[in-house]
Image 1 (cartoon, helix red, strand yellow):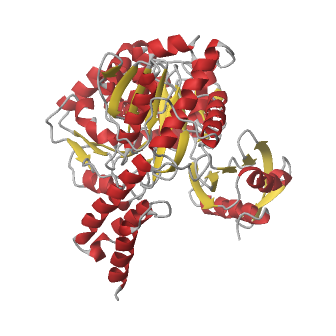
Image 2: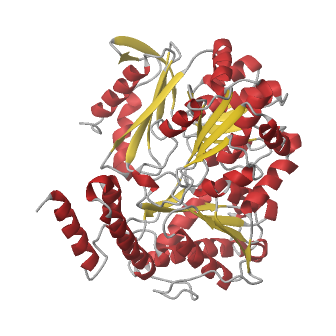
Image 3: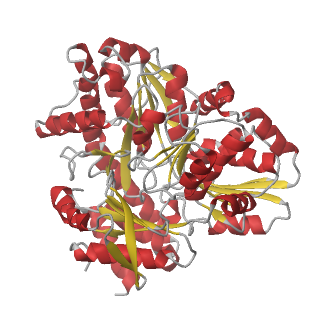
Amino acid sequence: MTSIEQLQHKIENMLEAPTFAHQDYLGMIAELVQKKEATGLAWQTYVDRLYTKVHEEIICNSGKPVSDVSFGTSGWRGILGKDLFSKSVAQVIMAIIEMYKEADTEGDLNEALGIESFAEACKRGCVVGFDNRFGGESLAAVAVEVLAAVGVQVYYAGETTTGALSAAVLQLQAAFSINFTPSHNPLQYAGLKFNAADGGPAAAELTHCITTKARAIIAENRLPASFEAGKQYEIQFNSTVEKIDSLKLWQKHVQMNYDAHGIAYDDVIEKFAENENFVVVVDSVHGASRLHIQDLFCRTTSSRLVQLRENDDVTFGGVAPEPSSENMIGTVAALQRRDEKLKLGAIIDPDGDRIRFTDGTVEISMNQFGAMAYHFLHEWKKKKGMVAKTVATSNLANSLATSLGEEVYEPRVGFKEFKPVINKALVCFEESDGISIIGHTPEKDAYIGLLLALDMIQTTGKNLGEYLEEIENTYGFFYPARDAISVTLEGEKLHTALAGLAKYQQRSSVEIGGELKSITKVIDVDGRKILFEDGSWLMIRPSGTEPKVRFYVESRSPDGTEALIRAAKDMLREVGLLS
């Protein structure tokens, strides 16, 4: 039996199994997508049949999530069908409702929720949406059913992006939003993001409350009175469930906040339409943004707006659906085939909250683009104010702020950590390709990043690589990089192991590339960030969304990042996390 025949036999056994409890349908789908060339035309038939089983598992799973419900930096993530399925989602929505009901009696969470009572939350309502993931519509329908049954007004956005949902919350003055997305995680994952009335990622006390209540509800096997196990729910629009256009609400939000940020949306798009020497390539990697790009550009018919991977594919063609150098290859190639002088390429993740850029020659990650956006708003738009960046992000923005006489706000990783400076900082950004600006939403948003880049290029008359070079020549060169390792330890055991890094203190030394470097500062707000005398640094922290330890480095020379990465790995080896 050939390897292909063995694979087919394995799939047939999986499809014929009487229960789905121990069947890894999505893992097999991922394997098939990777081997589609070798398996011939039958692979799509098998993928379709396996997804039918995934759908059955989503609807009919009557058990408990394989992993405990936990809301991290960007909500609850888990394996579709195993962790997130109709019943578990109904129970988590039940936990959210119970949290709001406490507002009537306890009131401790009211400030973070942005409401005074459960009745107010019901009246103001909830915005519900999902990204392109398989099963998103089914899970959203469960959430709508449970919410509407207790009197919560529901605004149904359907498939959309995280940034558009955030704008919708603010424009509708809704109480909260539920968004089904695991962001950039692989195809096996599903997720649920909860944002409160401010439209931004929920504060830690709220996610802790939801986590605690959800675990208790699941342990007691309680269910909402309106939920019927094994039922395929569908959206029924009525006076309690209203369909909305989240992108139009996003556009309105940008337009009405022009005075704060200075980005004239309509003018930016009109200038692009008129500029025959400007080409834009946007790669949606099959995600939700594919539905919006044409409308973002006001339905332009110009061939200078090029969309890549704009078809619906819940497998993402087998790639990790994130803004990365590897995924940027197609965008770069498309730009290099063009003759226009001004070129902008962008890649957007599935739920549209992360974006990375290129001009066809130079790749611009958020480490650089966030600093460029700050410079653009401060120097070109003449806006004054601080810059906010997570502690794992490049210090290029620090150098800029120091020279401009402005402050830097540098919290732990996670966009919700910017809450204290929303509408004070001109730009809030993190190295993992998330950004927002003053006058916009407190949620990271690829679309505002794209609009910024368009305005930046047309205002300066420079491609992003040229503008970056101009900034670096003035404020210094910084070379960031990052990596991660998978770990088996979790929780307290992982934190105990990482505590071994406390030996690296100010004024001690670390060998980097065969040279001893003195530590000038240690920042421990999130893991451990160690800064050296030459301005380079490394940082180690546990991931908030995956069983991994992440490390970030930044050198002041182009050939210094590898040595810093090796040093970070040596440190992890010392504390027993790397063999």
